[in-house]
Length: 31
Image (cartoon, rainbow, N blue to C red; front, side, top):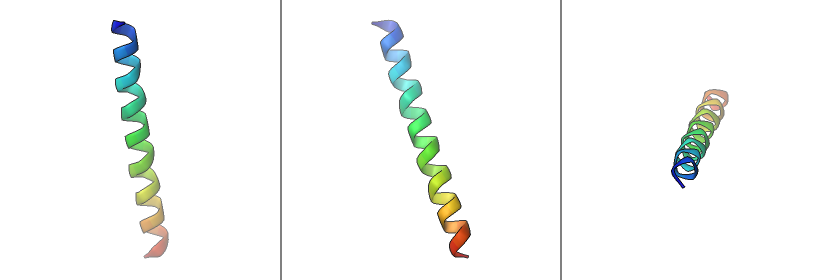
C-alpha cells in the first residue's frame, strides 16, 4: 500500500512534467 502511494505520486509527477514540457514545446513553436 505504501509502494502504491509512492508509485501514484511518481506517476502524477511524471504526467505533470510531460504536460508542462508539451505546453512549453507547443508555445515555443508558436513564437
